[in-house]
Image 1 (cartoon, rainbow, N blue to C red):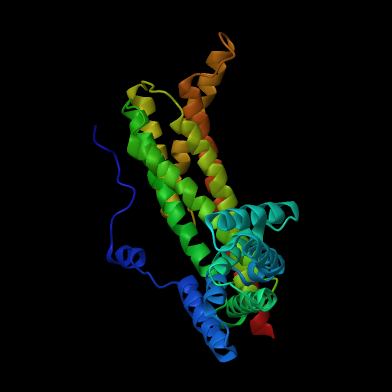
Image 2: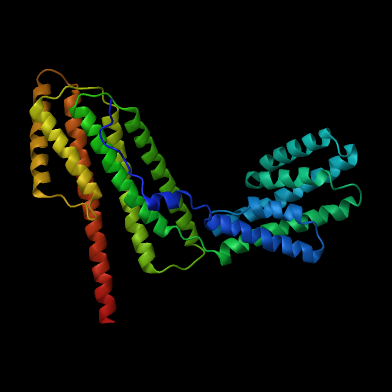
Length: 363
């Protein structure tokens, strides 16, 4: 059965974005590895352990790097200590590798150093083949190289390339709004044509849910960055209103999910026409920069409210259970209410911007 509406058209910009391999984290990793290896070369230390540490400790935010560094260094010391002890007892053997890995993981778990377990295990097992004598000096050298990798990766995160997710968050929210509108119209088309839920519609819905989680993760990263770096008020204000929109989008997805869960229902032609007009109008509003709704949209809402009122009153006399038709009307009205909330947030944002501009002009 043919799909009603494609969710996104391919574009040159999207193609370039998809195949843009060099991002901020890749650059940070490259810089951290180069500086770490250079320091180890100057100190006469083997760079392998330091480089491994630098690679696996580059975090999305500087705050995470600093927080986890306090955990990773003692965890690495534990891994190095186990490597020295078991290497002394059993030599370079498969049993030693197993014992070092298991003992390090258990110790990190018991001491609540889970964030450093990976670095600790890598440090421990990598040391086994290189430690043959001078156990104590090797132990301290490995700690030194690990500390070097941790310090460099943290400083690169903090000073060299400051993570700034605000522009990415706002652009992704705009894309999410458009994609959500497409899924709403696609599902509305299926309902009005008495079609079952298409696999493509389900897949698109799952994708926008995943995109929403990605944006929320970026929002958490951005909040952490503000604890370490000074940002101007405009960036913080834009982020604040963007996050309010994201919260409303989450609610839109909840009601859209209810529409996806409905079984097939046969709507009479006049009712199907109203539903089709409503989902099309919702899509257009979600695509509009200020979520504006025209008089035609208001007229469709009134018709939909009449249908909902008639369904509810008719059901009260015979059954307490809402029919599929009632649920459709209710969910569409709920989506309309959330559109009004988005429109309200947008106007608050505009008024705030104008207020700030007037204040600066006066000053």
